[in-house]
Length: 396
Ligand code: PMP
Ligand code: GLU
Image 1: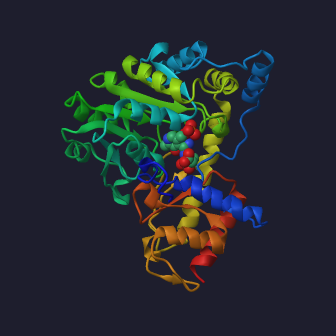
Image 2: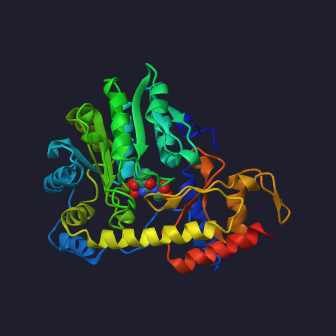
Image 3: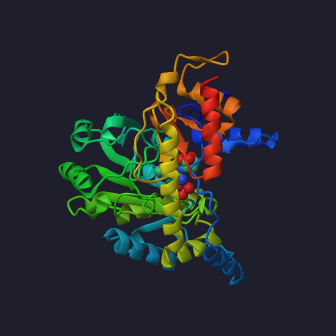
C-alpha cells in the first residue's frame, strides 16, 4: 500500500465479499461461466410495483435533495413498521434513512465510538463490523463460538467479554455468515445481561429479518430494561431484492439519531430521493414477494445442505435464516491440490475460483479461518453446477 495515504487506510482490510465478487466478475468477463457464491445478494428482480413507484417518483419530481434523515412519510412508515412487526417504539424523529444498512451501521459506530472504546462482536460476524469499528479507532472484541453451538454466543460468554471500556454490543440475527437465529428466550437472556450495564449500547442488525426459516423474527429492542439503549438497523436490500437501490435505516435513541443526521449531513446528505420513494412502497406494500423469495431460499438451503453431505470431510451448521451456510473446510488446509499448496481457506477459495470457477469467501473475513461462506441466493441449476465443479476440483 502507498505510504502517501493516510494511516487509517492501512489499519482496516478491504471487504473480502466485494473482493471475491470482483474477481468472479473479472473471470466471467473472459468468457468463463463463473458461479458467484461470494456476494450476499438476492438473484431476484425487485418486485415490479416497487420499481413502478420509483418511475412515478421521477415523474412526480422527486429529483431534488431529500431531507438528510429521510422523507418524513418514509420515516413515519418505518416507525409504524417497527411497531407493527417488531414491537419497537421509535418515533419518526428517532429514524434516520441512509445509503444502505452498511451506511447506517457506519453512522452509528462513528456517532458512539471514541478511540479505545471496545465493541463486543460475536464471532462469526459480518465482514464489515470489525473494519468499521477500526475505522472509528475502536477495538473489536470477539466472542468465539463453534459449529456445535450453531455459532451462537451465549449470554454468559457475552457478559465475560464486558470490561469498563465496553461501549457497544454489535450483532446480526439472522446472522451473516452463519444463518443462525437468536430465539426470543436467548435475546431475553442477553438483554438481562445488558440491563446491568447502563453505559453499553446494543446495535441489532436485522437486515435478514424476513429471511427466517424457523420462527417469527424477534428484536432485542423489545425488552424494556434495555429498550432505550438499542439501535435497530434494517434496510430494504434483502427482503425486497433491492441491493442496488441503497436504502437502509435505523431506529435509535433521539440523541443518537440526531448525531447520525449530523454526521450524514457532512458526508452524503439525504439518501437517494427516488430510492426513498421506492422504499416507502416496499415498506407499506404487500409482503407476498418477500414470502415467495423466502420459500425459495429455504428450498435452496436444503439443496445446498444435501450437496454438502457429499463432502464427508466438511462439517456444516444448519442455517435457520439469511441465505448463507458456513461449513468448516479445515480438512483441506495443508493439502496439495493439483500441485497447489492450500495453506488456508483463503487459498482454497482462490483455488476453487481458478479450478471450479466458483467464487466463495474465506471464513477469515468473518472471524473463522476454518470455514468458507457460501451464499446460496442462486437458482438450483447454478447451485448444482457449482457443487459438481467443487467436487471435481477437491478430488482431482
Ligand atoms: N448487515 C449485514 C449483516 C449484511 O449482510 C449486509 C449486506 N447486505 C448489510 C448489513 C448491508 O446492507 P446494505 O446493502 O443495505 O448496505
Ligand atoms: N452483505 C453482502 C455480503 O455479505 C454484500 C457485500 C457487502 O456489502 O460487503 O456479501
